[in-house]
Length: 367
Image 1: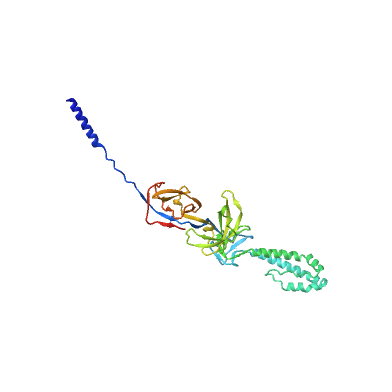
Image 2: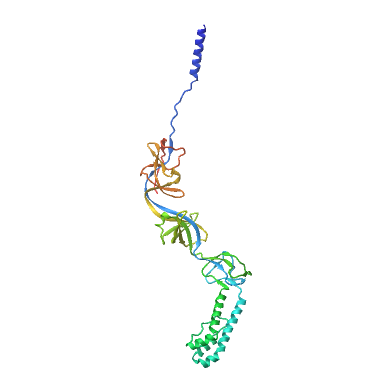
């Protein structure tokens, strides 16, 4: 009877174990859909991008060479004020200096008048042209050139009366008097104003900054490897940050020194046009060279900077490529054959050998 009970227990236990086993179901393999494009290699122009800030080609810092009170002019001496060539930029009170100038002219007139009696008797042949000079003499106008001496005797006589020395002293004063009015040398805008009317201006004091709006220069740093194609006179396309405006620039100068830390060379691009202002940030697009049998792709598709995913026999495969140039968003690569199905969208979790199927909306990569 014990044996029968033991056998029954074993039977019940085996039955329970058999009923507890789980049924192993076969999991179907997941095949992801990928988007691809057929490779079509072509000639890809490489455009070197560089950027910098515009600087006016004609810019002057305004300094005073004389001292006096700053007077009101016809236009306010304020930043942003436009002036035409020949207009008065600044007028400094010159009353005291002008009085001194008139005094010196009067002294010269007296010197010439005082030598005329001796000149009539000793050098009668020279009297007439000095007499004509005196008659044309005007205190309120710049001095005219002194008469040329007819001989050495007249020259020595005139010099002995301090006429020539006084004449050039006055010409020096007349030149200085001109500096009390600062005249605009070219059309432009006052970009910096450091003084106001009524201020005492001192000699050597900086008054402001004046720039022309007709011509600008863009200073950019270009890699040394592209210097063979950068020559003076080469056209360069410039654009602003929004890419809404473009200007045609020309390489004006190329620095002969290489920056040792960055291995770049400074290039100066001249540009003219509307909507340009000093300090504006521009990007230069310099056509460097063209790569044959190349392909331009988004940088996000490039793995480890030298690999891309392609589809072969329904599986992903990694292909080695050579990246010849990078921009901020794209890469120019070589090494893929025409007709290759290259994955054109990032695929999370991708790996070599992964089963995939190609989406129907395949296109062709063609620059």
